[in-house]
Structures are given as C-alpha cells and as structure tokens.
Amino acid sequence: MINILFALFSILAGIVLSEIAYALLLTIEYVMLGSFNFELSSAWHYLKIGAGGGGIMGIGIALLRYFGVKGF
Image 1: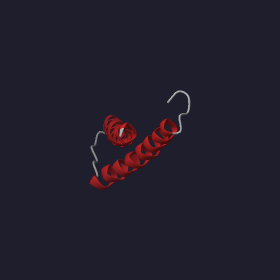
Image 2: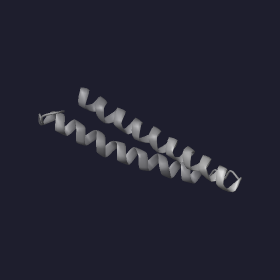
Image 3: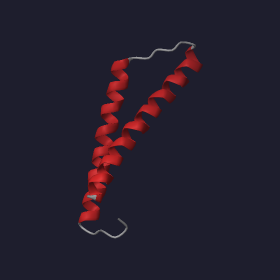
C-alpha cells in the first residue's frame, strides 16, 4: 500500500513542479517582452509531461522498495 502512495505522490509532485516551472517561464517572458501569453494547450502539455515524469519516478521508487534495494 505504501508503494502505491509513493507512486501517486510522485505523480502529483511531478505535476506541481512542471506547472510551477511553466509559471516561472511565463514570468520570465513577461519581464523580458512585457506581454503575458498564456496558452491552455501549453499548460495541458506541461501537466502531461509532469504526470509522465512523476509516474516514472514513482513507479521506479516503488519497485526499488519492493525489491529491497538498500537506501529505499
């Protein structure tokens, strides 16, 4: 059960981090160009990338804990 929670929290963390990175990039663009160009399709794209990366990381951690690798 704890391994599933690790995977889910990793997916959520990946999503949050990717959306924070997108917001940071929008802020940098606003400071440089003076215009704010938010696109919902880009936000959705970063959400999917974060979910994929978090899923890979979470499943990897869960498998390492399952097989008893030292440090996990």
